[in-house]
Image (cartoon, rainbow, N blue to C red; front, side, top):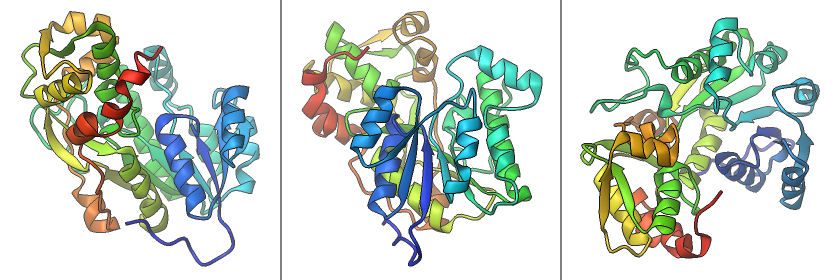
Length: 324
C-alpha cells in the first residue's frame, strides 16, 4: 500500500544516487506521489537521463558537497540512495578521521526539521550465520572496515534526530526486480549467460538470505517518509529464507541451462565477482516485521525466485547479455 501524498503544497525532494538502481525507482515513486525531485548525478549523461524523466538534475558529488548543501534550502526531503564504500580505503579513512561522506550534509540540516532517509543495507550484519536479524539484534563482531564504516554511518544518521533532523535509516537486503540488481541475481545471470553455467560457492547451498523487490522497497520509502519516527531504523525484507541453491537453480533456468549448477571455491567466486563473491557465500537474513507492523508495509510483488524464472530476468536475460 502506498500512502496518499499530504494535502498541502507540493513537497520538494532531493535524491542522491537518482541514476542508480534503487535511487532511480525511489525518484520515480516520489514523482508519482506529487513530489518535485532534484536528482544528484555525477555525470552529464546521468543528468540528461534525469531531465528526460522530469527530474531536475544537479551535477554534483559528495566528495565536494558544497553544491548539494547549497540546494538543501530548496527541498523538504533528502533521500540518500548511493553507496560510498566501493573502496576499502574510503571506509578506513572515515574510521580513522571520525567523520563520514555525509557529515557535512547532515550538519547543514541540523535544526531544520527536514527529513533525511539513508539507504543502508544488511551488509552491516555480514554473515548472519543462521540468525534472522531484527533491528535490535546485536550485530556480530567484525574487523572488516567497510562493515564497520557502514555501521558507523547508520549511527551518525540516526543521531542526527537529536539535532533537529527527521533522520530515518532503511536497511535493504538483496534487492531485485526490473531486470537489475547486483550479485543476486543480476551478476549471477550475466555470468551464466556469458559462460553457460550458474555457480554458487561450495558448501553454501543451504545458506539463506532475505530479499525485497525494488518496487516494494520504493513503496516502503514513501511509507517511511510519511509515517516513520525520527531516529528510526527499519529492515526491509519481504522474504527471509531463500536458499543459495534455489537462487542458483533459478538463475540457471532463466539462462536456459535447465537448472544445472556448479559449485566453485570461494577463491574462484572472488575471481568472478570480486569482493562480492564473499557476499554470495554468506548467510544474510533479516526480518521485515517492524516495517509491516509500524508502517503498514505490504510487499506484494513476485518473490525473488519467481522474478528470476518468470519475471523481468527471464524476459530480458538473453537479450541483455553480460553487462560491463
